[in-house]
Amino acid sequence: MDNQQFIEKFAESIELEDTSNLLVTTEFRSLEEWDSLAYLSVIAMLDEEYDLQIENASFKKLKTLGDIIDYVEANK
Image (cartoon, rainbow, N blue to C red; front, side, top):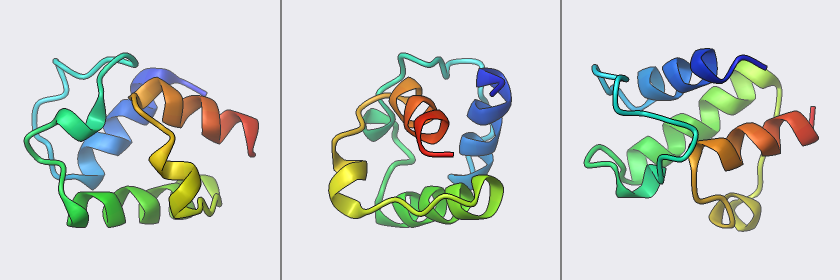
């Protein structure tokens, strides 16, 4: 999976315009845009784009964008 492409899809799902500061090491919960709606949007994006359903308990363990990418790759 292309990391930059995933980051762009993530940013789009939480309606973040500028992706220049997003890296695989970015802790997504620290983003100003992160809230419960952003969480639901990311869950929906993972389902739509990657056909992946993730449980809340599993998602809570993820800290960075790279963690989400790794989870998607491991659970395709």
